[in-house]
Figure 1 (cartoon, rainbow, N blue to C red):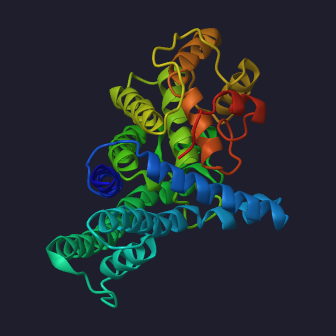
Figure 2: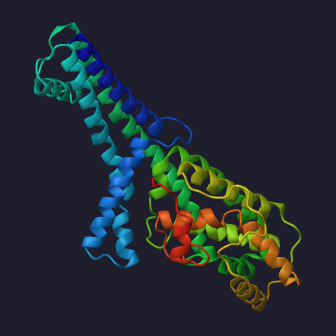
Figure 3: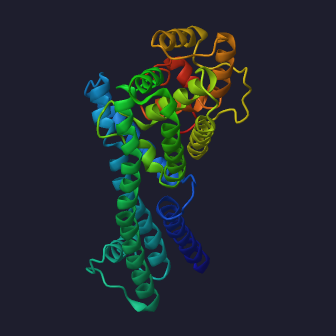
Length: 361
């Protein structure tokens, strides 16, 4: 009988420790660390919202976007009752193991201690120690969630500032071609270097924030037709066209922005357990067709922008840049249900499904 009590106590302690570590990895650990319990909560909430959208006949993008706007906030709030339930279960096991006569009594003592209600007093030294530690763990979990929210929304605001400004420079939905045309007409195409520097910093920021604060991936923009994945793809395509096609002196800042961008998307993809080729070859296929590139080349030329004369080489150079982020961009656009936009979320659903991960967060 003693061995059974020791085993149950060990099981309860394991549940509590695993739950606390899950909260620490989600809220405190300053690096990307996939957390199974958090992933499960997010998956469950996502499926519930998708079912709700299906049952309510939400067929338009704006309606689905309105429903999924609640996805990340609801998932974050659901984490606390999920953790509380597991902590209550774990401590109930320990209370039973140290002498509480029935499982119902153990559950009542555990719930009273966790929520600091005090309607079921603990008896004896061991039960009192367990009650104190459970109350402390409950307060710690609440404090972590409260401290986490301002941090995540500060990162969200930093992200959205440049996403909002991109609409002025690239239209809505944003397009790399439109962005280059507007810079040519308004700012001067030679001033693109300032844009690449700003977005290099932006990519570095999202690489850190979207892996250490995973819920940010799913927080949607205040305006339905704006989206951080679409903005990232627009800027990367614009930089790739600048480096490959525009007849300008070589701009290292455009290439640095490209590298910062596709490395940031790869780090986020690793965090989300995406499957992709980390060492693509310049000749590997991409989702942009040669016909689409030729149409973009002709449009830029008709706008008066000086382009490199060797169109075939421009295409090879552009494809060589795009292959570094093509797969990940489409996968993220599908995962986050990004709005329709050129050269990203407008790719075929069948192609996107091929690029999907084995799991979702």
